Image (cartoon, rainbow, N blue to C red; front, side, top):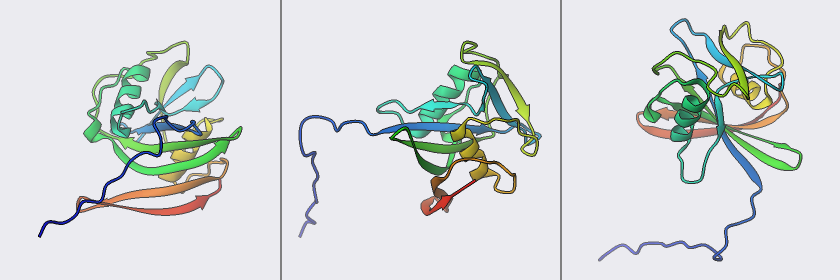
Length: 174
């Protein structure tokens, strides 16, 4: 006897009204354990990253944004997603996927100088201020021992053990 397949379908033919911004931030670590941070024209320091486009996986978006912003090249499979962060800004839900990368090619440069004037390697214990809020949330999730002030964010930690992913959820305040 065959198993019956459970199916699914959309409720209608129109996409739902957007209620969230979906992005990714990448902690790029050099061989000395320093973090790559960019100086944004708005005066904040930020990790490479940006919006995830429709149809893109988180890792593909992270590799694309990394190349567009810094000129660094990375294989999506080398980008490890370790958390999902959720907060709300001006009534819009913001979902940020936190990732880390240690294998990449190239030397970082300001590939979008109208947005980020320079990229610098910084020690996790010597981070500059102010950090862009999603970058602060990602760095605080990655380096919980570093004193980083940031708005509350719901954090879903993603772990992988023997090829199996699991998650743990908590509300974190900086």
